[in-house]
Length: 185
Image (tube, rainbow, N blue to C red; front, side, top):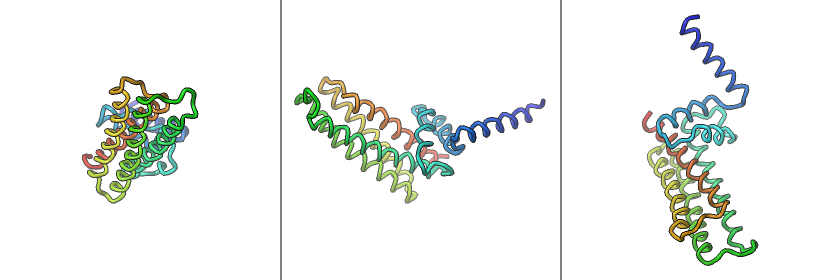
């Protein structure tokens, strides 16, 4: 069998696998390009998380950048809710003063992160890709400040904060990388 024919068969098999698994080919291609252009992008995370969103099927690259920003908004909002629950002192024992201070810092930073991701979405939607990319990068910086606040206090973030922070860093990186694909194809 010729090499060209083998490539066609392989591509057809991959397309069939993509179709059978319900993963949109545009999501796969965009996440692959993003992970190839930015080594921080976790390809599996990118495909998994973008594919869950209702706006992903058939979206082009700017559409997927907006999906990543929207996922970031939702994730940051969930983090705020988790932090508020931790601060509500319904748990026993309630957080000590250092933990409460770090949680309050994170709560404010996650509010700011919601705004950063929402701003990234709006800028990408308005075709201001460089500004959108910067706002997504700002979201990444905000989450790192949250985890840094715990480290400076000599504390380990509570599980919900650690989980949300790891997720927020990844979705910010994905959003930044996909937006960068539009700016620098």
